[in-house]
Image (cartoon, rainbow, N blue to C red; front, side, top):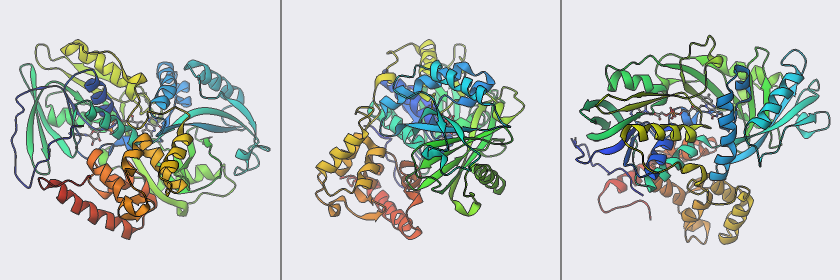
Length: 524
Ligand code: FAD
């Protein structure tokens, strides 16, 4: 695995790589990470620069569904829905640790979309996208079914259909880990400040905390998500930068509202839909809102109005009302949708659009707009087709059948993996083994190493987070801060106390210093 070189203390390094890379990717969200992985696997030389942490943009703020998008059928987005549906089982097979099937309960009632319309939509959903392993739609009698218990008695009928759940931030990191293992250089906390053409090469300037650097590349991919226009405007000056429609969506995490493992798909009286999803064992995730956004995408935050909207929407369905005091965490993300001129935010296309600036006889650039977590792998294949046309083809599509790191076990083998971990490391509690298997899959074995007791896992920071896991994340997954560990590599931020967070912060700061002293390594 190749990481970006470690640059030391305060110096400003002007570094011009003599050897241009084939592809320079701006942005370490799902799209950038998938493109870097696919390109590296086909034999291109690749550098990816992410200005913050991997998945620190939209790609950790999604509803976390690998889904066709039932509601997109209403906007006749059949191409997108079909491609997304097909991706569900492909991604599940490639990453059965971080992706799992989920059933969705969709109550129907008078006044909103009629039952026949929902049935028709679900029939299309079941048959449009090559469903093989996921079970089909069925009808539910909520007066008898467990799923009816938390709901108000007027909801007596529902449909139940299949989609998948994904740990979005980990999907990004696993793609980046795979890209690095295939030879890509992945630089985090490295902002691209300028990209200019010099003949058939790009000169790309980056700024990191300790150094400014210059790279040369044959082709530039602008996968900066909601910043895609900003990159066009400020870094690649002179380019058309009025393409993206920013749409904010927020979620709340509330104390657990129901005991079963299915999710709810609710319709609101304003015609919008939202989900209530079992989350991190003890919580329920509710979202999303959908509204146009202006300003810095990094500053998007949930408003009081959005919290109240989501609480009121959920309370229409659950017997026990959901109130703002139930909210333990909230997050907000900005969709970088292609501006297709739709009137309402929720009607703007979710499909991706690639805009190639072939550069004539000068260096080419591919700009990426829109897309979904679900379609990022397919988007990467489309980008690789384009790269092939622009700088010469290499390799063939390969990611559909290649497991992501830690995902090299059977799609239905999760319980067996947990059992195997507990068998080999007999001191592991069930919830600890399950958490490690969910986040790391078979890579959990590397993290646990030769430990024969909890004491040998190193310092305990709380909630089963041990030093060996943090060391692994710092050494192999670009984690630098406690926030990286607690909110993107894991969701243990929901469980650690503020004192425990501070302890982790202090420990990681010391470990970073150890890492940056030549000859010293944090990872054992
Ligand atoms: P990002 O993840 O934002 O990545 C872009 C990266 O570029 C950022 O990390 C940023 O820091 C970096 N960057 C920007 N400028 C620079 C620069 N100058 N130099 C270096 N780096 C830079 N999709 C689904 O499939 N399923 C869902 O359930 C789902 N739910 C969603 C719910 C909400 C509320 C939202 C907002 C989106 C949802 N999506 C969902 C869509 C999906 O999350 C996005 O399409 C996807 O995350 C976009 O990824 P990206 O890589 O384009 O952008």
